[in-house]
View 1 (cartoon, rainbow, N blue to C red):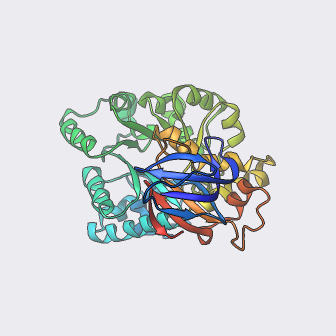
View 2 (cartoon, rainbow, N blue to C red; view 1 turned 90 degrees about the vertical axis):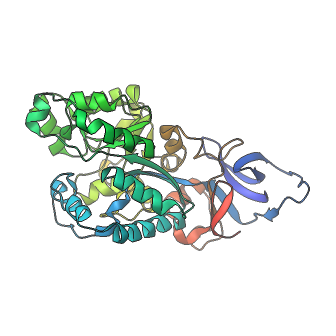
View 3 (cartoon, rainbow, N blue to C red; view 1 turned 30 degrees about the horizontal axis):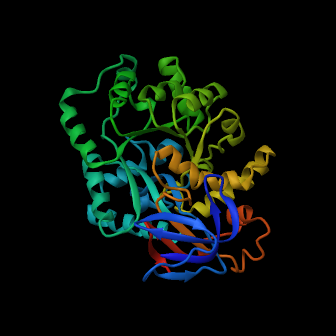
Length: 396
């Protein structure tokens, strides 16, 4: 496929190019330059009036929560989402796979329409949960990174005694790992250091929630004398999730020992936990990506996530963030943190991208493309979504 006369956000710095041609072949961006000549029976499309941007990478989701939208608005964080006694875990235990699967499928289609080409799911319910999501995705052309989880959690005494991972669960854990892309651990406060170190040997992606709330930080220090992030790093995670209440020391450790941090600002705010300190994260050298987190409390919409964090950071912290940096959090940085060949429009990268209408009522005129996309674009401005070089939603 050859796309002529199109505007693009090019490369890892999302450089705006007003007019160029893009050749896509074998699922990859093959050539990007002006005046490419079509060859043979190659399909050629005029991209005049469109801007091509990388597909969104929703780097943290729990789409199993699709079954319980907005039912816990006035509850505390633990009452909503605690993995042992929260409303969420109770709902999941008492929902049939068929019913849950239908709502999870709806969420997948919703993400595609909103320009999300890859999502990373912390999959609850052990092996059954992983297999259910894989079954749902079998006929949906959405790229998914599935991080499985054992339904195994330790209490305060077990953590203080530093008990090991039970041997009788190791076979089941091995079966889980064969079916997923890695592990997504609930948090350090549900696992002893020995268990976290056991998980650290997993030769796939490793991620963990950390420092999401003041309460979780306080609990870790009271229980073990260490910060929650210090203990979470025992997992040797590829990335940490949230870090809303991480200290400067925590963030500096994270920048040295992980690929980065996935923040979920709308979810944190919905749980009345404030928002992450992006400026401090950047100053500490952290690579930051964005996720929409629980579908129970949030729509899986990266446009809304970007707009929210840009404006709320200015409103609360009186600090401006370059909209290009926020757009990188939704695209480029997700690819870096995951270690995948996605999130960037350049030769050799996988052709996951979004075609936006430059003449959409909310976008025209686009004096600053990055700012326009971050705080004015929406699902309605999308003309088409491409995954792996194939248009899977809309048309151009």
